[in-house]
Length: 123
Image (cartoon, rainbow, N blue to C red; front, side, top):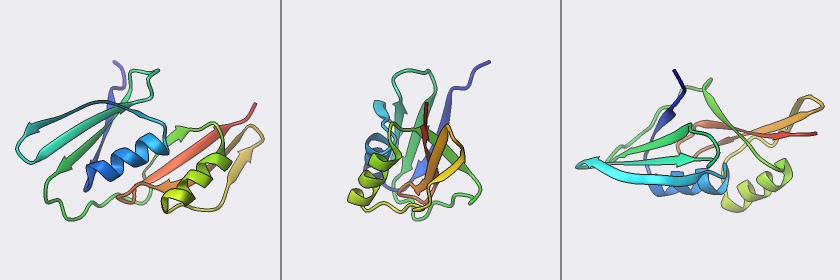
């Protein structure tokens, strides 16, 4: 058995697509509407078979994400990622965590408030 995807329900598909492509570096793999009022987009990092599924229901008013759930993505540079988050006006924790010398990360919020961990692995 293998891990296939994670589904996140979003209010505004375009804003979420911009966040996950511009900040997490994912690529839009496919986008479709299986039924009236529902649009689904699958994103991938281009290397693994695991995908991120964004599902948008027309008219969805509020999305509630539990505060202790986060998803993580690696990035090349925390400094560059922080710059992009600031330029885009995204909400994020300014604290850079480094629990060990080979790792540092920050937490940002996607457009619907889901915590996203952005990780730089140092050599």
